[in-house]
Image (cartoon, rainbow, N blue to C red):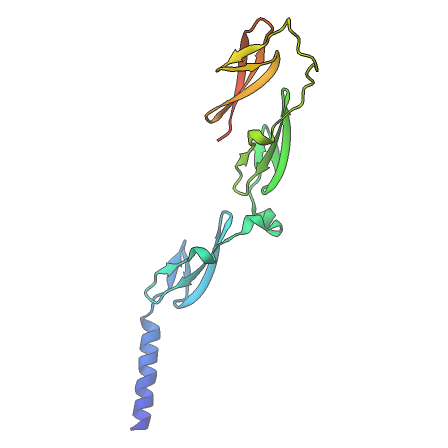
Length: 174
């Protein structure tokens, strides 16, 4: 009788193990009732494969791998006018009278916040009263090159001494 009970127990155990389904993600199978992980963009998802073939990856187990300098080589490069910058790094470039200090994100996008932009042109210490500058959208600018932000665009202009101005280029800053 005891041998029969043991045999029944093992058959139940085998049947239970065989009744679970593996999880599949992007063509890769993961054993049921086990943990697995995968990288997508800047994130490493640490997941659990359930017996019914479903899987869950709780947010508290997800890691941002781009913030770790040892994984910067996994990041995409940013490109600006034919120049490449490594992902997860800072870079700067000059355009007109402005130096843009930017961040290259791990996904290949880049940000150049206006708070980090510097005017690199020299301005006269004493305002030139004969050259009043110009007013654009209610704001006064001295003669010379300047820019202003309008929603998602940074607009580059040049102000003449007669109060007129001409804008020649813009840049998406969103």
